Length: 541
Image (cartoon, rainbow, N blue to C red; front, side):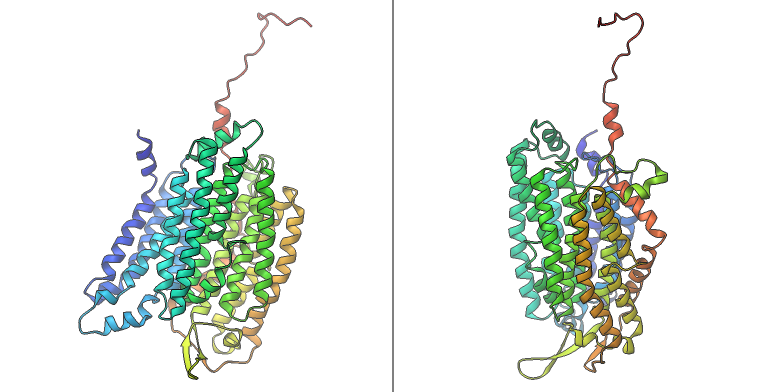
């Protein structure tokens, strides 16, 4: 059968997402108000059906041996997408141009952005799914761009303030720069090996007598630096605080989770081209330096912020540093469990699977915290002297949240404790998972760096929690009546407890299976040596 058709047969979830994106455009521009209001439901049903299709799809073989990474990342992206959809419901509807279009005697589709917003929402998540399934450098580049390009429009159209448009422009130009950097790296990888397909590149690298060539190493370095933009890691982190602050809070939650998931999936694939047994020294030193700088810069700068969205922006940068430690640790055939009875114990020494689990734990806590912030509306003085209501949240605005809305305060407390890594929450299990992998790989200084930076992060995470419970109530703050926001935040709280307990075993097993090298097929191609029988002449001593 044609290899292209074989690959196409595995893309039913992505085709469902594409169909849903087109339907969102149609319903968002429909003349009937009831059809337009159904657009978020169309997006939600689309992701639910795509999730079912992913679960029913057979696990395809991967040229790098990552058998289960494709369904794992797809399910992770769709699960987070459903929660993020609940957080983002109502964002385009609250815009002034949307309100004027809806209130007019005749619906004006030129002012409506509802269809485009939810369509781009689905397309960006589709890009994450395609990134996980990439088996070619060209495919990987296009999938990453499909993840990023819709977010530029989502930022610009998410708020009526010029700050949103400014953030979109910054994000766009820096995103174009990063795309040029990692695309040039891909070109050098092609030049060093002569292939764009992952399996052929890995074989070419393995055939190099003295390890990866200088051209291959240079291509890898540029590719990693370019992908640092997707995960908001040093030195491509400078946009994060401004963009997170300028975008609407629900869209900021999307930015903190979706591009980061795509970026780490891409990094796993790119680093897999040279393998972890062991990592080439230049690549290992590069990742170690970026990891330590990223977690340190993120935590130190978050500590001195007063805007909560900027705090969480630098927090997101710090967590990228933690996740990069897992990529440094990687895995070897010795620390990957092969028996189902010891899979959890073996997985605790697998840095790549620790990254996959930590992405889920981090995503849940991040969505919960931004969902709480999205419910808060505060009035701040303008240049003219009046008060303007917007979603820029400071410590003063969340002060005394417990007395006004105990549910939101409790959710924020759980999210902060999970992000700092307190037991018995998912964040604690995720950090133990990462630290265990670093010790197994003999990178114990990185484990110490995680512990020190986690202690630094406790300063601002606990400050947020303490302000919600013990601060003086701000009378200029009120809260949106948004049941979907509260429900999504409550789900993340339940997940934080569940993934910090027995339920974590199942996810750890799935994350482990996602990156277990498929060594059995490779061993089957080894020709057996003929046995010496009595009829064969013996070699004289």
